[in-house]
Structures are given as structure tokens and as C-alpha cells.
Image 1 (cartoon, one colour):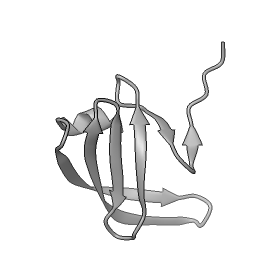
Image 2: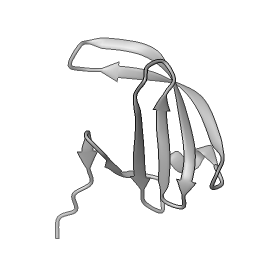
Image 3: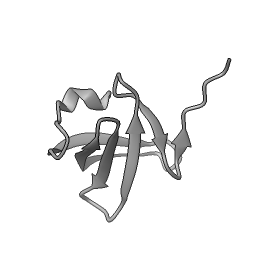
Image 4: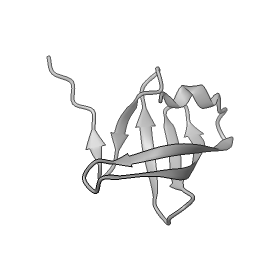
Length: 77
């Protein structure tokens, strides 16, 4: 889901309910997430069901480019 669908201005936050699919543990469960817009291209993600939090960077379309500790977008020439 592109983060732009949340329609957040800088300084705004929104919680959403999602279905989390963990293929490695064969688990599907509902999760409550909070997204807070910090900058034009930066959001703070909080999993409201756990203590996990991460700053994520997105492109102009809202697609995640950097999710520290999980993945980084790599573009090939």
C-alpha cells in the first residue's frame, strides 16, 4: 500500500488496521499500525500491538525506499 493513500500532512498521524502475513512462520494476524509524517519523504511507523518502531523513507509515489533493518530499495542501471 502506498503510504500516500493516508493523505497525511507533515506533523499528522493516522492509525490503520492491516492483515499481517508472516510467510516464514506461516502466520496471518490483524495488526494495528500508526504512521506519523515527519517530513515530505519520511514517516515514523509504530506497530501498536508491539514495541516495534521505525523511520521509513518513501519516494514521491509513497513507495518505501528505505526501511532500516529490513530492506533498502536498490535500482539497477
